[in-house]
Image (cartoon, rainbow, N blue to C red; front, side, top):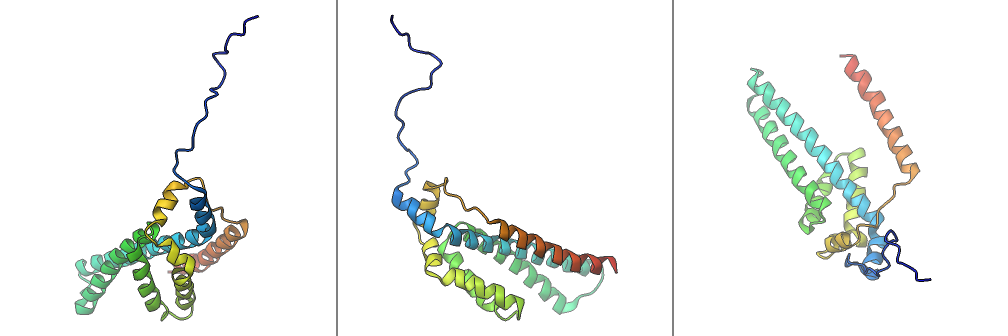
Length: 184
């Protein structure tokens, strides 16, 4: 009997890996993925800061045009808030893209943020640790974005404990903010 090829069978051709990732790149990414995720979260934190600074600046601006008469101090606050919102947005974008200048800017902003005792001191000390650690330096080297692009299959998985702590934190903040807003 002659065996006819099955037209519905999957192809049997050998396909090479075309991603360009080497085992060395994968190893580097595996070693730095947790630190990378923490650094990227700083970018999200700065985006949130930029949003709230922008909202505050716009609210002051609306107050100035509604006849509240903020004076020179109010005008300076509007300018400072809006400039800081733009600065935080640029730094957040740079951090999330692993640009070396963003690391330097983050270190400067975190040093200033250390003055916000006690919560600002704790958060900014952690940011400084992330930026000044050896893994933080490695993440912001010029070849690291290429490593990330070559290894998209390597992902960071957030543990359930972190999600639980985050949910508790959000609930505590909501428990403090909502009654304050309702009582007005």
